[in-house]
Amino acid sequence: MTEFQPSADEIGLLQSLCARGPDADGLRDLYARVVWSHLTEPGDGVAGLLIAGLGAREALVAAAHGGAGSPSGIEPKQLQEARKRWMPRLSRDAVRGSLEVAARTGLHLLAPDDAGWPAKLGDLDLHAPHVLWVRGDAAAPSSTRPSVALIGARAATSYGEHVAIDLAAELSASGIIVVSGAAYGIDGAAHRATLAAGGTTIALLAGGVDRPYPAGHADLIERISAAGAVIGEVPPGSAPTKWRFLQRNRLIAALADVTVVVEAGWRSGSLNTAGHAAALGRPLGAVPGPVTSAASAGSHRLLREFGATCITTADDVRELLGATPASVDTARADADRPRTDDTTRVRDALSMRAWRISDDVARRSGMASAEVEAVLGLLMLGGEVEQSLLGWRRLQTVGR
Image (cartoon, rainbow, N blue to C red):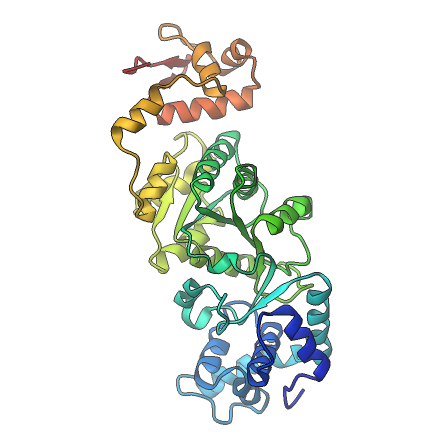
């Protein structure tokens, strides 16, 4: 691969994966970027600097030959150390194998000079991905519609999943794209609610998009690809690793106009995504949870220490997006309108005089205890109920 020139067969594979015409130079540059996606781990700033200074093809030559003509800003020792990481991965067979898998599984390939490349990734600068491998709608990542990342803990509580479902359903119903990571817990709840509402959702994976991860979400990931897009920056067949998960988070933050942490523990990986969003200057929101819940400790930390906006409704998220929230009068009218849903059942099972434990409320409402606790958490956020050691009690509210 010393010349880094694609064969005629590889040119054909590239053309089947992208929307480009027979531009030979463009296809050779795309091929070089595919090679780089094999050589580097996501977010490699040395490779980004080399490519920015020389272009993908010349950067490969410089890397292969020890940096002759490398751009300023890269110290010789820095490049030498980087080559030790890159060169053992240089394999034409691996590159060709990825292209064949991508063609066989119907993937799309995007590069920064493609019309469908999401411009928001430019904010990642030298740490932007070399290419994107897309399963589903290749136009979804570059859509001009507003997008929101709804993220949170894998070990989510029923309260956290309930909030994620409510936010995702309402936001997607108003045309907002929901971005997340297809993980268990909050991510999965957000994706499923968006699909149920007939909306568009995008999932960012840490491994190859041909290998659904987690495996238990294989069906969900397939449904996401049919109604939106599943995206990865590492080649097909690549395994997810801890580093790749952390770097995947920067893509979630960059692709979304707003990031909302729905529920996160003190050490949740969602805080890493929130950090990327803050570094990129993206608006950041967090949903408060019960003060006694360790599952919300990270969310409370974002609110207290990092200036995250408190999110309790979809209108709060729309406000972060810059949309005009519903008028107060309309919101009150909607709140006053009777609802025959789980919230109404829990309200009816509560008393304004007597304290009732959640199990008693569950029995009276005919619901499961976990479902009742999730609804009680939302009602407490809305100022409709209070909690004490004796249980739960409704508060007197105007118009109810």
